[in-house]
Image 1 (cartoon, rainbow, N blue to C red):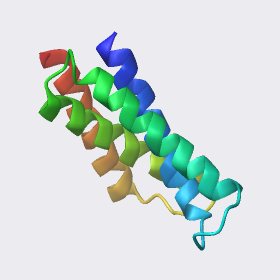
Image 2: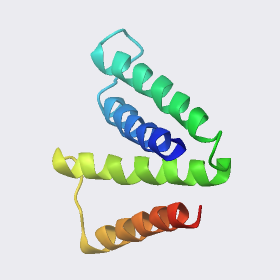
Image 3: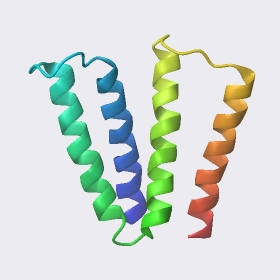
Image 4: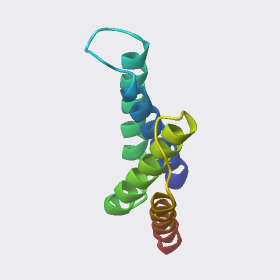
Length: 104
């Protein structure tokens, strides 16, 4: 169950980084609300995941999911570009995350 929590934590990390793109001040609006909700859920699921997965592994996987997911969302929205080099480096990051899962 820890890996399911970790996947959810990573997906909510993508949610809060995506919402962060649209926050421009500390006023109350939908991007800020989405950001706060996703942060709370992401850290909550990360906390649950680290009960059965070593924290170092959980944190590395969480960051990896968040980094790759945030770039994928940015590319899909046309806000970021994806070069061959960047794509290969992201593939390496995904490989490292898969390797950490395989070793656990």
